[in-house]
Amino acid sequence: MSLLVLGKIALVVFLVLGCSALVISYLRRRPKGGPQPLSDPNASGYLDLYGGRVAPTPLPEWVTWDETSGQDGTGEDPDAGASRRGL
Image 1 (spheres, helix red, strand yellow):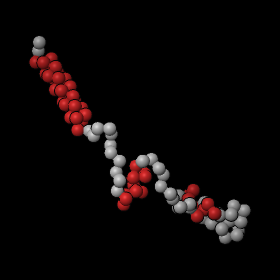
Image 2 (tube, one colour):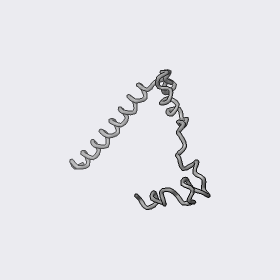
Image 3 (cartoon, one colour):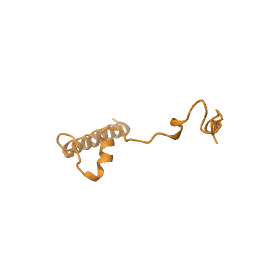
Image 4 (spheres, one colour):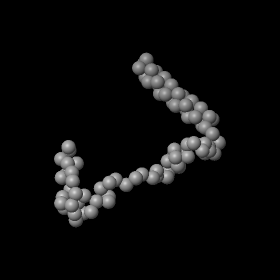
């Protein structure tokens, strides 16, 4: 066998052993039963987001506009489509 073939075999063995060492160390160090829930009262908003709940957000002002009269009573959009023009 040539040196090139031996080098390729050594590289594959090195990569397999390295990956297996990383997987084994991860499996040994992870907490039993998954991540433990946090109970910090000051972090309740963050923990709600971490748990999958959506944070309450205020509605934008355009939600309350009257579609027929517009905000200024002219029947036009007060921005006149500025957001669509990229302004």
